[in-house]
Amino acid sequence: MRQYLLISILCLQTMMGFASDVRHLYVKLDSLIAHYQETTAEKENRIRNLKDGVKTMSLTDDQTYDLNLRLYDEYVAFRFDSAFYYVEKNVERFRHTDDHDRFAASAIRMAHILSVTGLFDRARRLMDEIDPEQLGDEQCVAYYNQQSELNLYRSEMAQYTPYFNDYIQKAQYYRQLIIQTAPKDSYDYIFSLATYTCETGNPDKAIQMMEAWLPKLDVSTRDYSIVTSTLAYFYQCKGDRERQEYYLLLSAISDEQGAIRENNSLRSLAEILMARGENDIAYRYLYQSITEARFYGSRLRMMQVGRMAPQIMNLYDKERAQTQRNTYIYLGIISFISLILLGIMAYTLVLLRKKKAASRQIKAMNKTLTAHNEQIQAANSQMKEANRIKDEYIGRFLELSSNLIKQGEDRNKQLNRLARDRKLEELYAELKSSQAINNGIRMFHQNFDEAFLNIYPAFISEVNKLLMPDNAFVISEGDSRRLTTELRILALIRLGISDNQDIADILRSSITTIYTYRSKLKSRSVNKDTFEDDVRKIATY
Image (cartoon, rainbow, N blue to C red):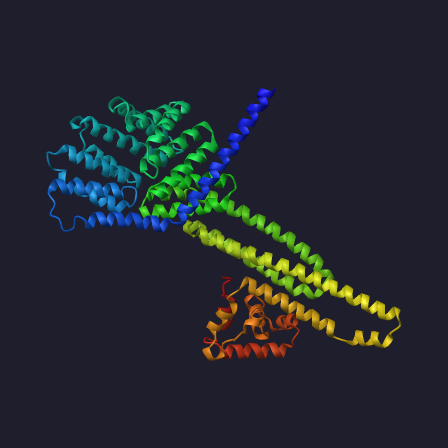
């Protein structure tokens, strides 16, 4: 019994340690994504230095060939068009010569570039120009590797079709040829043997081989990214989602460290997070994956991301439905309180309009998402803005309601005390006084000003941009959290309340006063015809 307990404790400690490692990897990945521009710039500077180093040199044909291959290696996982440009030079240079080895080496590399961008037919026709009988063992291994890779890419595009297994079998065939040809201690041999073993139904043995080989590779290299991504696939075949996620994280970190823009791990990681309900992180990784695929120029990766569009739209629909349910609950609570405090009804109407505006924004985001997946981040920003407005107004509403109730209780106690002591003159004077109402109005204005400026902190400066310079509002430092009557009118217009009677009721002013203020504001504006529409477009930040 004690042995079982000890084993259970050890397993629990191992799981907790593994979870901590995963969290640490997510932090590291987020940091690398935040420095995406810097990593890209460093890569571009390194390539620029390589090119500048040979600008003034007169290169021989052999040196030009070697330089093109080196530039291809730099660009192969960074920029499709540049890698294609340099390797195509070598292909055209040796296509009609007797130097079959150099032609084959260049053609194999060019076929790889064509494959990763989805140009399968062109890649296959180029591979058909190579005669494997004329190649040495090393070139043969590269040739078989590319044939296997080409069939794997074709299988990705043929998923859920009758042709999927045909491409997998062809890939397995070329893996067998690599196993027969490559040296037993080489990367190509181990990688091909492991992938072949996994496809034959033994992922455990494949994992054992690949994990034993992994320490021999440098982190941030393309081989490390590929091996960790492949290990994630092996664990996926086993049904071990935790280990799959762990190795996808390692692969994605390696991609970001090495400025590898032709990658697949971030997208696969986003799928796992989305299935787990961590949508915000998943959207961020998916957006980064789209950015890198577009930078690289990979049509294949863009099509793979496009397949996730229905899943993303479904999640958005669920979030929208949940948001609407929550909004209805809040409105029910507010409506109940408004029966007691009729004076707050205008505030509730503002919240209702904000809810409708948020619903329209969500619908607009869904339409935008259907046509443009790259606008996911903007849609998230709009949803957060709506939630921020909702949270700010609910908090202010509850605080104001509580203060008004307390003031009412205090005033009631005071009046009861005067009545009990028969101080009728003081009682009459207190009943006749409008100080309590004025205090309530001031409290309402103060809460409205602070709530509005919390949501629209730059509102005053944005309004001043719409006015002629001589007519701009000047707010002293002590009044930076307060609005004037004119600014409150513009604030209500920004919140969607444009009827003069509604504005007059809320601000406790006459309709004539409100009309006069609005007319004066229009006359002071730069563009009188669109002034109020421009006010409505002022953003929260």
